[in-house]
Length: 477
View 1: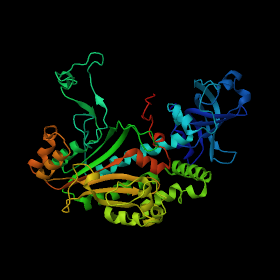
View 2 (view 1 turned 90 degrees about the vertical axis):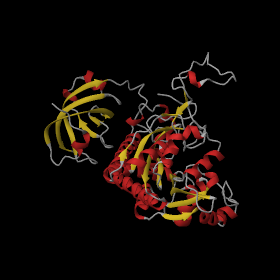
View 3 (view 1 turned 45 degrees about the vertical axis):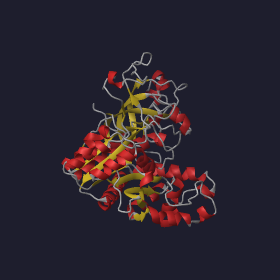
């Protein structure tokens, strides 16, 4: 007999004489009540065992974490809290779980403990909910771009270029460490390496995506990216996923329109399809907020925050205007910011971004026209020669969630910027070809997928929204 998902049984509109269900035991009370979960939904289904007619040996093996197959009838529940339960006629133990050793006991665990048991943490309500939301958001991203006629492009994970110019990259090599070939100057001889040149794990698929946008019109990438940045913070990962659309003939205004529409679409999609999970996450966040001192609490609940993004048009503000607002703000004048804003050209920190969104504008904010000195080489230089057509989208509670720009389409300007940064033009010959042969205005942006999942789930540590986090000194699992 084919088994039915717990989600479908709980959503049933009538009782069923014979059902089969498989899952993992969350709790087993009074030798009678099994709370069973199969991962399809946050709720457990109660299975009532006839303990008088069930062998003692079987009852002893129904422990937290055990995998079981249950047959019985779906009946109206006698207890409160659920509409239906299963009256069990047969229990089969598929996989035992030693109750003394199973780490995911039915009690509150610290997030740190759960990270140490990342292979089992989805057995909890919290991580089951997070990963279902992550999955739905992932699908929504593809659906949005596919509906709009974008072409999905898989850009290389191993690359010879540093798209960001930051240099924080993981080297990829097949050379032996104990006998590395060297040049006459004593440097590593990469000509002897697998690819015949120095290669790294990608920090972004943007440059390659741009080349495809200049023939296919509108493309997007959605794949893993890597940063060898030694940042042991709640906002950084060494391996994370990036969504990067690139669109030919789009200027910065059209790029901002696309980003705003895209974000609102995927959040709305998740809210419609993850109602139970988001309700649970909303209640969890509210309980967590109550533990904080009043001045550290967020003004909004999770569902409120998501609704806030859907209902408010994103306020568009130039970097210059934002600097004036921040310079004259109370926290800046009273030296409450950790980083005091003193002059134009400062690189904005999360505290500044959150002040603009949560306190000043009270809406999501898109900042644009940043100083060229603090932005990447590929961003289009404005006529003032000191700002570039860059944009960042700022959200409540999180700060920057999207970074993008109109790309520099003029060959001579791009060559000059590359030279100023000391980047070898030969390394980017293929990228410059798109400016030699049929160049045109084009734009794109990058969304760190985990930052989006962080926002939608209300979690505060990025390590809790990716299955197996990769961070400094940690490559477990």
